Each structure stands twice: as C-alpha cells, then as structure tokens.
Length: 115
Length: 112
Image (cartoon, rainbow over all chains, first blue to last red; front, side, top):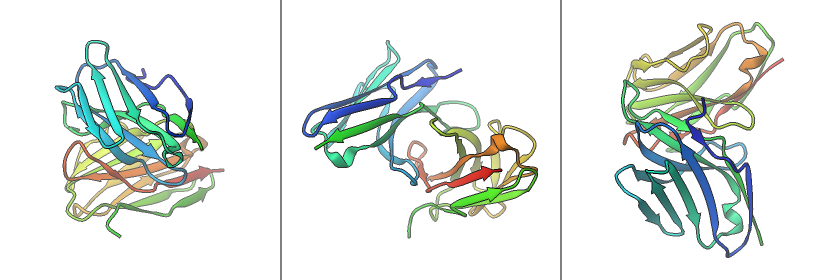
C-alpha cells in the first residue's frame, strides 16, 4: 500500500531549463509535505516543505506546489543546474498517532541535469 | 561536525549473526527516527524516540529488530540473527522541529 507515489523513476533536463518532479499521495491525514535530495552514499538532505494549509512555498530556485483536491504536489527547480543532479524524494508527515513527525516517502526520482 | 553521524558506514554480516548500528543525533534534538531503505526504494519508517522513550515501533519488521536510546541521545538499532532480506541502508534522523528531519549518512548492511 504505497501512500506516497513518485511515478517517474527518472527525469532528464537541460541546464537552465525547468525541472518538474511530481508526487501523489492517498492519505488525507498527512499534514506536511517535504522534498529531500539525496546524493550517492549520503543521507537525504531536506530541501523544502509545505504545510497542507498552503498551496505554494518558494525558496530561491525551488518552489513546491500542493493541490489538495488532487492529492498531488510538485517540485519546480528553475533554472536547473548540473549540481541539482541527484535523487529527489517526496515525503509526507503523519499528523496523528504517537509518531507525530513520522515520514512516509515516495520511491524517488533520479534527476539528471545535462550541461 | 554538527550533523547526524552513524557507524559503521558499512557492515557485512553472515546470515545468523547479530549486528548493532549506532546513531549519534544532533545535540539537543529530542526526536530520533530510524528508517530502512531497500535498494531503489524510498526510506521506510522503523521506529521513533522522543528523548529516551520509544513512542512508536510499529515499523520494525520482526522481533529480531530492537532499538534503544537509554539516555535520550545516542541510539542503537540491533538486529538479531540477520537474514538476507535485512540487507539495506539503515538511516537515522533527528529533529528539533517536527517537520524537519536531519538524516545521517546511513549504514549499508549486507547479509551474506
């Protein structure tokens, strides 16, 4: 039962263009959504987050959009740079229970930015 | 350094051996999480501590998995009688603010 899904295993874009990474979720109990970036042999690094009460959050080149009715979020990177090449994980925070803060991750999308 | 550290970084165990994986969280972080990441997958939740209290262990796959954080700082994940399906990267994360978890580099466990 995959509650958070990233349906694109990989994405390839040209330097300077926009990268759009997508994520879908099924559980309406998630109250916070996060994007993590991961390089090989390193742990995931927090990138940007959005509360479920908002529809957009921007931080420099990174913008996350949330469509609650569609249970869909996306990460936009503009402009894309070769250093952005990494695996990107979408994650959702569980709002209730005793693990307030437990994250459920998608499978990841490998982003490759070509010079 | 100021980040989350984990040791060992790599561990090879023969099937049936016990292993212990260590996590040193960021100083002052009360919340600590363990995740398991299989090859090609996203991390999956194993267990959660708030200080020394283990508040959720619902993700531990079997009773061979045990985690502790006796003094509310360093945590150890122990796997008894390792099996091949335990091969994965084990990630530890700590947080001060609930929605930002800081991950360590992980321990890659290979069971042969």
